[in-house]
Length: 352
View: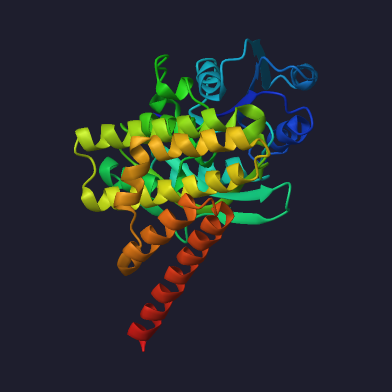
């Protein structure tokens, strides 16, 4: 059994071409108020100075290990790091992000308070480095899940839960499936890996503390992979997830509506990004991939916004067919805002 005073955290960092940010990332671990940690840095074939910077830190700190290997992608690199880690719990950190100073201490306290759960999921601050806009992803209170089916519904109800960077996972939960779909895609690898990790979890605890700072660079999507391939992977991974869940009867029709709504909202954001593509031929090819994919029809069919379903579906078809993609993005955003206001008003009326 894990002893509460000797809890060791392994912070796993896949590193790829982040020389501008990797120092801040590493320092955020070194400066942790809880000191029983090890840092595993895996240089995934970087072509800039990221690997050299990692080596410099490792020379000065025996708690830091650095590995260099051929590029294999983020999911495979995390698995590589985990197989070399010795911690009781694994914490996932991207090489351009940071942990807040007391992150490991808060996680340690949550772990011991909740009788050593399989997973702790915490809050995250997301900052767009292009626009300076920030978002907070967190819960209002501590929530405990002991049912995988209910946990799965929550994870799939909102894409902000997909990120492994919000999760501290008991080391015994880590899977090492070399054939995992997560190892073959860039878009959706966190979603697949989260499902694989948590399918055997007995207890998962959500805590409201914001422990992670996530840098969001919208341009990185097109820098890492051609947008057409990105869209194809987005659709394929979601299709894989839905088919697998329906086949195992883990979700019902109502759940499918909520999940499809979440996926469609993500897809609309991709459509907006593609609308800014200066290559008209490539732009058309991306839209054709979306229109012709079987999951596109499923998203529309199961889209769920209460009594407004039919109205939004008609508006979606009209705007998408006529190439009004930015309007589509803002219409959907406004639609969700309207729904939140109406929901708040109904709650206010009930209280009166």
